[in-house]
Image (cartoon, rainbow, N blue to C red; front, side, top):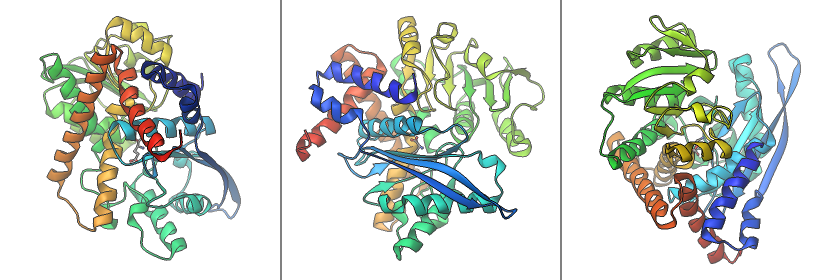
Length: 411
Ligand code: GLU
């Protein structure tokens, strides 16, 4: 199954719980618009390289399309389409006034110089410019993109538009209208919903063992929050491999090692493991925080964690879902668990529109409220429809999207 087929499978399940009419589901089966562009970039050696990029707007009934742009050597059109559809669901579940969008450029950014990266980022914005805007489609960071890239893209957009437009993109540097707290928002959002899930089972973080796959922005910050709240993070990994210490890893030190060496693998005093081995460790909490499709029917029955916090988008395939839910695993689905990022993006966009900026405390408090409310709504749907957490989260999201489509007279 490619990622878009996975989305269609999840959509089908949510739609059947809600008994949505076929023509309504039909609208959601297709993205509203997929833009495919080629981006010629002048390389430092004077040659020109051509990169391919996409921006997919899945559904905009609730508002402007919203979602990140990823740079990755394996990006495909279907993947970008799936990610945009998941953004529609995520934004609706969090009750944000947004539809879903996503962008991707097929490139290995680690192989580009800073100048090449800037020219690529500006070039991509030039090509999608007409379809982007604070009231139209609002990009943000995703895998291997960051505030610096958002700044270049915003600057390029403003030059083309001939006016300032900070709300055109989120995840910007603070000095250009970024929001306080955005940097660690995805991680702390996941941390908040995990706290709620533990509370539901009358327990807390104390002494819980954790394995984190992916030590980028989301993975490293949730590691830090869990470490500071007395959980025991025993394993972490990145694209080069993983490390394991059953006695617990000193996460602030591991973060320093990652910053210095570019990876966690050379951290002293830990056993080397593979990314696959990490997923099946005997831990209480598993946090996939890298890419899609890492837990499949092949390894799901070996997953021992009681809680899975999906900080990555789409890390568990539908077949793996079935196996895990049958085992009683509590899955915090991606559209809830990693929604902290886009929720603080929403706060950033609101602050840009007001031209008035909140302090960090206010941002985090507002985020906690939003995440906890979405968690409660998911739990209510689990009870009232007697479905698992993923299906429940889809029903909450779909109800809102369909209501907006009905109000507009689309369906
Ligand atoms: N890329 C993040 C996500 O997948 C954030 C999107 C945003 O802030 O718009 O949710």
